[in-house]
Amino acid sequence: MIKELSVKTSSQVELIDITHMVEKVVSESKTKSGICTVYVPHTTAGITINENADPSVREDIIKELNKIIPFDDNYSHLEGNSAAHIKATVVGSSETVLIEDRRLVLGTWQGIYFCEFDGPRTRKVIVKIVEG
Ligand code: ZN
Image 1 (cartoon, rainbow, N blue to C red):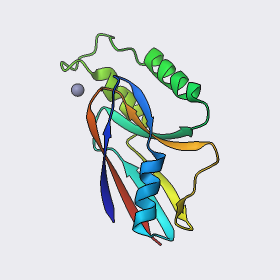
Image 2 (image 1 turned 90 degrees about the vertical axis):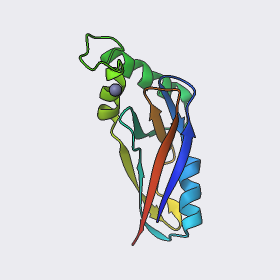
Image 3 (image 1 turned 45 degrees about the vertical axis):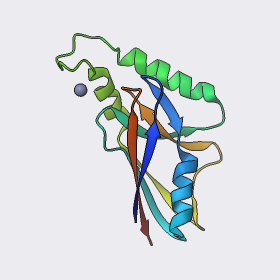
Image 4 (image 1 turned 30 degrees about the vertical axis):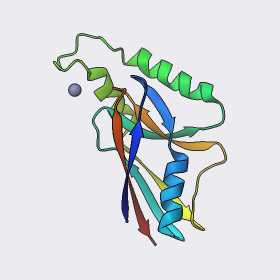
């Protein structure tokens, strides 16, 4: 099964915890065991899994990404959002999580994050579940 979610971002660069949204899709699918892929069909956004306990981890990730990939650096791309494209490539556009006992197999401190790099916008997240 496949499900499309909508995520509304409110900053230019932002990490949003979407774990609960993905858990809901898994729960509604009634999949006992399988694989869940979370994918963004965008060139300036990404998906990552990281710590969900201390919000300062998110802030540090954003701070360091902005440092190593500056907003302006004589980029060639005329649209002016090359930094966002590069960040999206560094982070990647999907994550795969196992499903067991109708739940996502995530570590205690792990959350699934939608990564906005060229917001604010309304974005799509596609969740595909394969039973097995
Ligand atoms: Zn662009």
